[in-house]
Structures are given as structure tokens and as C-alpha cells.
Length: 247
Image 1 (cartoon, rainbow, N blue to C red):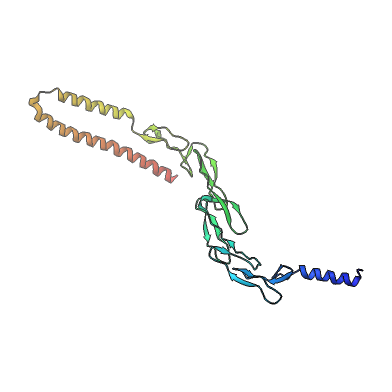
Image 2 (cartoon, rainbow, N blue to C red):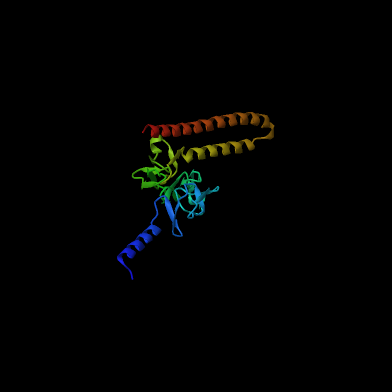
């Protein structure tokens, strides 16, 4: 027959058997002391002995007091997942991972990153509106008006006409106009050289000495003329760069 006194004793026994202190863990009806961080249970306590603990081995850890009989395996920061090691694993704490340079996080647990992706690259005609961080991707926007993108900024197109030059390569959303001397100047020079050489070849061989003399002067003149044009083109391009820098 179950009396009130027997019921109370039974209830107290159940409560004592199932509820352990926060510094203890329950095993086989016993409340055993937890092992300190960095240690695992080697042997559970008994009526006569306390818990036996041993240190975690290399590449394993336990980061809080516990009754675990096996240490946890340290996390490996996988470069294939866009991660690198921020803090190495110890017997008291797991590895801390962070995104690689140029990457941002897309997965995270309480303490560490678990996966990252590379920052997006801008398309032709776009500029960086907000640079990427370890926690966010790069934000881009379209260049507007008479501008082009060099991969990060919107820059104004060069006006070849304003520089007194011809546009030798058309501008695109991702590249500037390329300016230079008119192809007509080069064509005229080539024709002049061709005609001169042809006339020299028609002269008698007796005039060979004079031909060599004239050829030497011609080569010198041609080289000087070419360098003059080349220097003029470079000067205009440098002025173009300086104009953009000042703007």
C-alpha cells in the first residue's frame, strides 16, 4: 500500500538521482565532477572515487567543463572554402577561421567563419560603389554620361579633337579613346620613301658612290622626322593624362 510518506521519499530519491550540480554530470545514476577545459574523462567517478581526467591530445580540444570521454577534433580552415587560419587550435579552444584576402563570409557559427566567396568583379562600364569587406561583397554601379570604367573608377573619355589628334582606336565602356597622328601623315611619308628609293634604283651604277652618300643623309633625315612625330604624339598623350589628373 502506497502511503503519503512513501511517495514523498520516492519522489525525493528520483530528484536526487536525476538532478546534478552545474559543475557535475550524470552517469549511471551518479553525479560526477566535470573535467576542466582542455581535458576529457578517462574514468567516471564511483561511490569511492572522483572523476579521472586527462589532457586532450594535439589537434583536439574541449572548450568548457564537461563530462565528455572524447575530445573534439579541431576545425581545419579550408582554402578551398575561401578560409584561412586566424587563431590556431589549442586544447582549450577550436581553430578560428577568417576569409582569405579578397573574400567575404557566407557562413558563420558562434565564433568563427565556416565558408567564404571571392569578391565579385565589376563588369565593363561599372565602378566600385562600396568596396568588399570580410563580411560583405563588393557593390558596383554603372558609369553614367561620357565616362568609362577602368575597373574601379569612372573616368571621362579623352577628346582627341580637343588635343588636335585623331582617334585611332574607338572608346568602349571599359577603355578610353586612343589618340594619335592622322594615318594620312604616315601614308604620305611611306609614299615619299618608296618614290625616293625607286628613283635611286633607276640611276646608273657609276653613280653608286653618290647614291650611298645621299642614302646616308636620307636615313638621318627620315629618323629625325620620325622622332619628331613620335615625340609630338607622346607629348600630347602626357598632356592628356595631366589634364585628367588635374580634373
